[in-house]
Image (cartoon, rainbow, N blue to C red):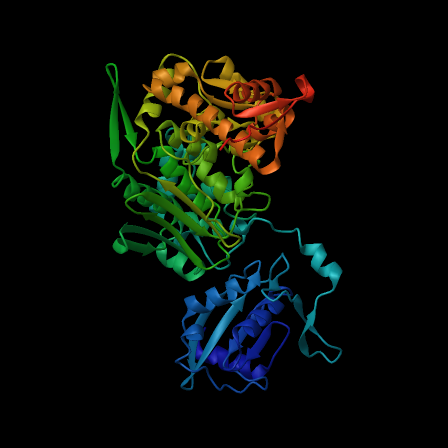
Length: 553
């Protein structure tokens, strides 16, 4: 926009689609003025012009307003859903005016303070911003759910990177990609991926996936990606950029793989590599961080490697309905469906939504811990995958077991890792790990008993499971099986004697509950302590109670 046009607009005064704001306006008031225009017919907001049309200018030192990229980020992050504007600075008679072009929106926008306003004319034809009525808000609340399909006005194919469109076609023709996309023209490819609207106008998703870095910087100022390599507390590598998503995916995965060391184990004539992070782990976690991040929020999608872990984080919490306790069981709920579909059709992520489960399965198969999402909050998703030395004995057993034609699913692997670390597992703990109900968890554990991998101890709710003698033998730990059983007996003995010392006596039912065993086993334990002179029995059979043996001086 040239100075003459800005001067003419200021002279003409405010209208339904033109609004003036002075130099002193704050960020929240600016966002409200922009939302007001967007919820009506869109228009122009001239900063540095008084209500009377006098051009006073913006202080050039106000970088938050004079830097178009920062200004657009401020506006985008102070509206829900974000409002994507264009902005430019124009010098008029030596005074700086910032011109913000606000598109009319189909969806209704609120400020981050929760205000819904719309620009209208009063009875005298003067423009004003008024609160929106409930039916106006509700009527448009469900119009748009996918931010990646938001139209960005004024862009064309020239704003996209032809190399990235070619990259998409090449990916689609390979492996698990959608080969039908490989021969499409640029426009037809964008249509097939739902990255343009019915009038072939480019969307947020089109810019994120195929835009030049210049286009992304100008129109998606909230988006940045980064890679860091840490050496203790020192940063060995630090890269931050705004690469389009397919390129970002490739570069980030390559950075991790170049530093992904591995161990080896030998099983017979076969060599089994145990990398720190499975290839599926690297690609799925990076892809998820790019596809499911909240692009309405300022922040960095960061891939960070240290000596003992890989951490991937991104702005925005989990999508609605997803939480750490149902990651492996909830139906897929992509925050940006158009982006998720693009990555699936490029063959970069699991097409049936089992990506997270596959990550868990692959890491466990390598004898390594599963991913940890416990650091996630309502504002960010953070997943940490620890490397450390692999449990090579367990990894070797899993590989050999599968080589023999047997299958181990994710629940089996979670169980083996748990009993390997804790010596036993209860049904409630299994249900927590599997993210299913206790009945289904019990069935899964009993299936491993039938396959000879676990042994059950106790009855009903008191039942626990431990590795079978055969599995300990295959892992080369025969003595550990004996120690585990012996430790249980010693622990139960001490628990019973401590209970009697505190409460005076104990019966079979109380011992069964205390030791988490079947009543018959509890009775056997109490009779053994009686025979060893540790307890005295009064009563008979089920009514019997056991007290401490008197100590003689």
